[in-house]
Amino acid sequence: MNDHDEKQSKTRPAYLIAGGGTGGHLYPAIAIADGIRKSRPESDIHFVGTAKGLESRIVPRHGYPLHLITVRGMARHFTLANVMVPFRLAYSMMQCFSLLRRIRPRVVIGTGGYVSGPVVYSATLLGYRTLVQEQNSVPGVTTRLLASRVDRVHLSFNASKSYFKKTKNLHVTGNPIRAFDLIYSAQSARNHFGLAPNRPTLLLFGGSQGAMSLNRALIDALETLMRNSDLQILWSCGSRGFAEAKTAADTFQGRIKVIPFIAEMALAYQASDLAVCRAGALTLAEITYCGLPSILVPYPHAAGGHQEKNARQMAERGAAILLPQPELSGETLARHILSAVEDRAKMKEMGLTAKSLSYPRATADLVESVFDLEKQAE
Image 1 (spheres, rainbow, N blue to C red):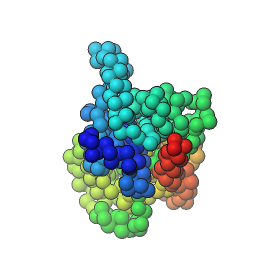
Image 2: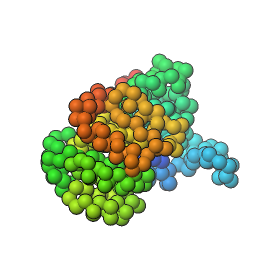
Image 3: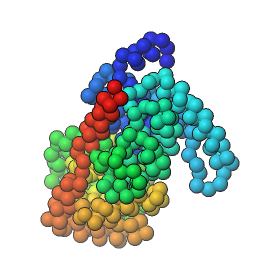
Image 4: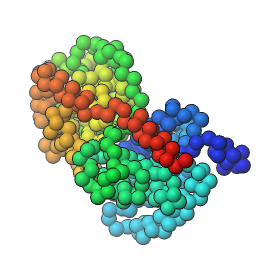
């Protein structure tokens, strides 16, 4: 930062956000940043991340400066790289101290992942106002370690409170999600994807990379689904699964749209009557916001089994159907889908329940919390 930039940073409110490695930590951070920028366009918003994390590619596309530190996570099995973790952490703390003194943020925000640990911890040592946002029902290690030191911890699930000893700084506000404009009818959204406007529509997706187990189960279920229903399918299969999915879909011309990656997810949700997907926290925040009934197949290797716990909470409330991965097959998937679409009243009830579990003001509430902390620091 040159002298001109430093002078500017003293006249404009600055905020520092750390969270990345995966989209689950990064996209809530971007949603918060966008919310701050919308309310205060003059703000200086800085991100901290690592060169290997998803943030190194995504953050610059959103127009925010990204500062890199050298921290790395600890592998779950012994490696020589684990020996270097304490030294990398110590060096990262020095980088964070320097960065904080240079930027002088009004508030420091962490959204999880190992990169947020040294940033937020350093901020607490230097007396900055701090806020942590946790996406999952089972709070991550970083959130639990920082919770007693930061000013506020924002949770996405009420049940997460049981993981913390200190409760006065806990706030349940849900997951901040990308701005969704739900302005299209189901028919116009289906037209956008080249689907029939009046057919019931199933959306299957497994995240930005797709999910091979979901793809294969759907491939095995297609004949049964196509023969026993008038469903059409919008299938986000990931680039790795595209060739196989396209070959399977070509047998049923006109009823299946296969796309490696759907960028316009708001339109995809509006086009659909039922979703089959994983149970990541952001996925659940989006489908509940849209009031979309779902069949949830939790990723079995998610840290702390948090996806299964996320999905189980949804299922127990009647907002979704839980299909554990060990039970997933073409037969079981087809059975659950057909059972759902044949009972329209139940699907409508599931959608309404899902909507009732959403936090439509999650981003706005987090931004307000940031500004409130800023006032306290003045």
